[in-house]
Amino acid sequence: MADLSIAVFVSGGGSNLQAVIDSVKDGKIHGQVNAVISNNSAAFALRRAEMEHIAAYHISNKLFPVPADFLSQINSVLVRHSINLIVLAGYMKLLPLEIVRRFRGRIINIHPALLPKYGGHGMYGINVHKAVIDAGEAQSGATVHFVDEVYDNGAIIIQRAVPVFPDDTPEILAARVLEVEHRILPLAVGMFL
Figure 1 (cartoon, rainbow, N blue to C red):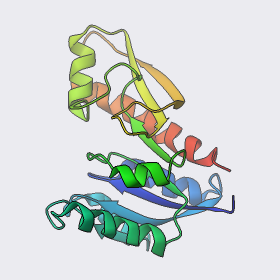
Figure 2: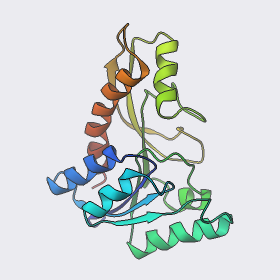
Figure 3: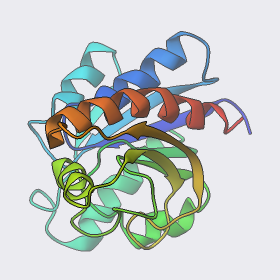
Figure 4: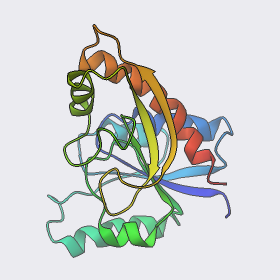
């Protein structure tokens, strides 16, 4: 494979996007983030992309309610930028099945728990950390995995654990897990060469 041409899909602040961008700049990833796509027009991740001179796109079901149009918009960006790796970094939507199938083995996701625990529908963001604490778990962590047709189901690439302390709130645990996410997502992207 030539150098990676990466599209990062995001829904929020984009701190994991920034970790990938910084690893590209540091030479740890042999490739380039060439497109950032968000379903949320207010996502700070889009602003991060603009500040880094990366093409940023707001593509959502609200803008494109017809599934074929939504798919066409995403495909157009992926083709325009010759994307060969898709990174889901806090993207809160399922990718269209056509994209998942066409990019099989070339889509990865970061999840804020030790999959297969605390994955699946509804397990995102603070919900994950609340569930981990409510279950009395001694550890949590982050997982980078391949994406398939089912939420949080694909083969695991990297996992790292963090302790859960008795006085943790979901927010405190989330911050501890996010630090690990920022380390393992760029590591997983770098493995693609």
